[in-house]
Length: 374
Ligand SMILES: Cc1ncc(COP(=O)(O)O)c(C=O)c1O
Image (cartoon, rainbow, N blue to C red; front, side, top):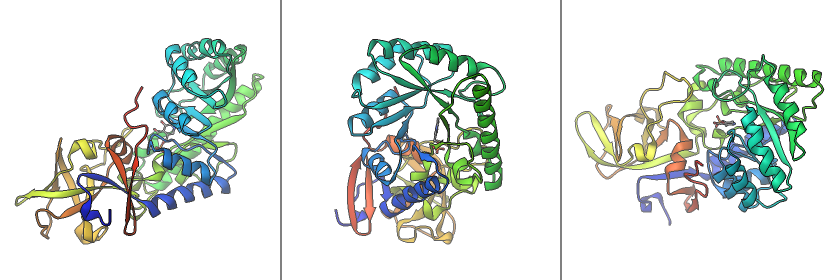
């Protein structure tokens, strides 16, 4: 393919140079602070991008699901953390059966049920499973209460099991997406660090060694001033970025690597109508308590991408149609726009492939672990 004119729309475009810049700058941040980087691959679900992250220095990948772990494990990633707690021994059986014995698999628990689900299959397969305890640092989603005795009790239980190895504590301060400034996100990151170090010290006080303290969300990692005591970061969204971290003030539109290419298929006095609806852009309007998001993306005419005078808001979506609120300029039917989505992670998950654009060169990469929610 020679130019984007040949790409059928809607399509998910990846600006390869911006992707590479995002990958590099996160690795540099990790290196600067002496942190292991274990990117969350749920954002891209792409073996090619995962391998590039490892080549640049990442110590392994984070995934959310067993399906994702199996895909990345089958393609040469040798250290994988499944960060969503698993409470089913069938799932642990499935992932252990599917991953080569040499792969360092790490799971996350926040309950005795989680420890029990991991212990049986690990013993049956004669493998050692790394286990992290998830700590709730304010998101209120998963994790033990940092003020209680839950972490110590779970760590002791893990250490009683011959085939489980307690690796440390893990947190995700996703509530930082609701922050309205970089400073506010930095405060959330600082609070997360102090909370995690408090849990670490309580465990050490209780006689439990804590090899790793793993944190991570793109806004907190990009905003944090101090990583002392942290050993690992797990940002995911940073590879593509989107309007959510931009809203927090930790990224700018010109850094965004993922856009949706769409065609104007109709227009009226109020709207340009595109062929990118919620089945391409998703109707994601923000995560974790965000309330300020307006619309479903920022669209620019393809030939005036990022021109401030030509920014259009995606005001409405139906499944296969998107409505761009018109301003003072016209666009021809058949012309194209590039849309920065609210949230790039679910957009990549829904796409058929990633269309990689670098100058005049266009290639396609598969989304190897797409729609693997189990
Ligand atoms: C446990 C965990 N770690 C890391 C991340 C990465 O966060 P982000 O995509 O904001 O960088 C997520 C995202 O949902 C997560 O749930």
